Length: 428
Image (cartoon, rainbow, N blue to C red; front, side, top):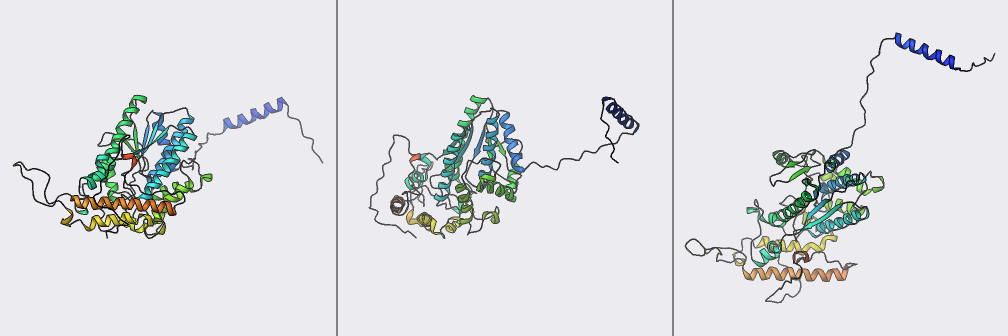
């Protein structure tokens, strides 16, 4: 038997609602427990939001970028934060700066130059207000002038605790740029610039102790000894967090962030870590592995503070693609082999005593040895140019050592060699 459905009229609906209200009013109130959301903001998103909040407060950001894994991770976060700020109509100018000593490991420096070029093109294409800078030591403080020209001895393991080379070639040029950018920021925005750095507590016990002593934070800028405000945006990150972020650069189509760094450069970064550590993948290696004396992953091409061997360089030289760097390592061996060779030194000191006497003792490199170093370096440059023209598809020279960027515009450098340099030189 089919029942006929009664139509809902206004009177029946009103009656039903009244019945429901009567039931509810007669029941005791039931406490409702709200479960917290299980959604967790990713550590990458936390970093981006921290940087974005500072931009909203009017602060320009300045990233110290070495091209290594940690600073590249910081670059990903900063660029995304600036992109979102621009979408909100905030056009404060920000900065990414790097340092070149003039004698860097060529493979690492070439990677840095490639990434800087990609960043500049990306920022121009997407109208992002980020400027890219590269600092150099002054010509007067460069290796070519101080050591080859004046005979100043390089730092050795025995006196490497105070590294004047790092101060003259990296720290002081970076500080000069920071002072200039700070003045511009105050003039344009009235706010202090905030320096973003890639230090992590997880790197080592010693690094953690230094960071804690400085009071570094990942959420609030801290004023350092030099007076600048610094933010350690990835201070609480683990190594896995860093590599997971970088792996996103290898597959940009699946990454939540539009990358300024190409897939090729991301692969190159992974390869540098592997090649400089006896073929061990950086993900497996962790924060250990070969480092230079100043703490960078590879350091200068002929750093003598590392001791008998430059392990990262010699690891790379086991691969044919880095064979062009062997003369650099040979020059380093020359410096190490002559550390205690008095025949390479001037035996008359250069500083007068209070009584007006010069000391008789081994001092700076002798004029003859400085000529020998210059001949070697010039020959090395000439051989590299020949190699590039003969084997490189675009004839790219990997390591010119009289860097054009160190010579002021309108100036020329005159080199006088008193003995001809003939053929390749193999000092050791």
